[in-house]
Length: 358
Image 1: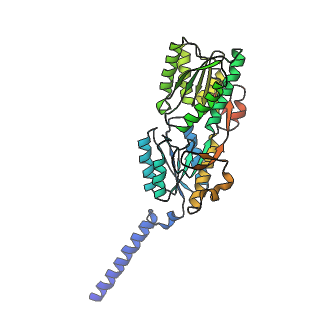
Image 2: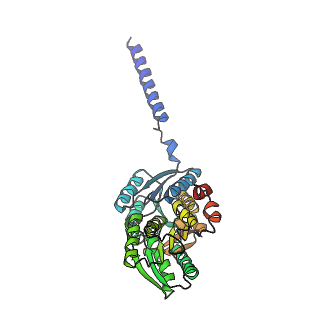
Image 3: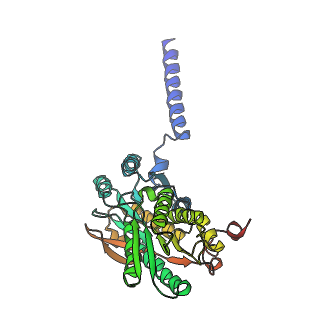
């Protein structure tokens, strides 16, 4: 009897052990399935602007096509929140983090924290300053500003007969390298023309369209509507400026020059309608796809020097105040009323129906 009970007990224990192992395998308890999969963190500063939905989609599609898993988050333009999100990604065991910093001047601490855990960081869009960034993928923000400035000069010649008038520079987030470089590029063009006076130069927390509208309203009031040109660091703030101009009957490209950057749908419609002169189309697809590809390469070669892994991809070295950072630069293009079809529509960024439809 005792022998039968012993055999029954052994069989019961064996079945229990087998069931537990099977349960673990069926419901994700097996480590083998996850071990070989690259995990990439993608941390944006915000999802406030329309374009960032595209950044996320293109990046995720590319990373997943390579066989990686994407851990995505954003920080609502708050640097302290971004640090928390960054630490959370590290806790989730990501192999590489692609980071668009809220505050480019203080984000070096995040990179240092990642390096302590053997995780490389790919800078995205905004160049991180004074930190040991591994590599950066960007559009040339300085070139964005100079292109806006050159379009403004052409506008003055066409509509005013001379490059003379008052200019307002509507800048983005304080401490953001993109805002700084775009503004520097625009100011370089302004400074080349003695007839141009920069009467307003204002940064805007959170790249806020509402704050940009208030700045434009105050400027128009102060100068009796005598502001000839507004150069804006992004599309959202350009919309704020146009709202202020509309209230004064000035949202007309024959009256006031307005430049934006990001090619949001509403702004492209404004360009088509003659309310806004130019948008700079920072091609999001090559930016995000390239960042995903670089992150995947680094994750697959964790012990190799970055430059040895992606040497063929590097366009230039940029000094970020801490070191020379290998940098990859993706294209930008101006969008005017005459080339909407050949730019944002041809690239599949916006559809013809969305722009021209009722």
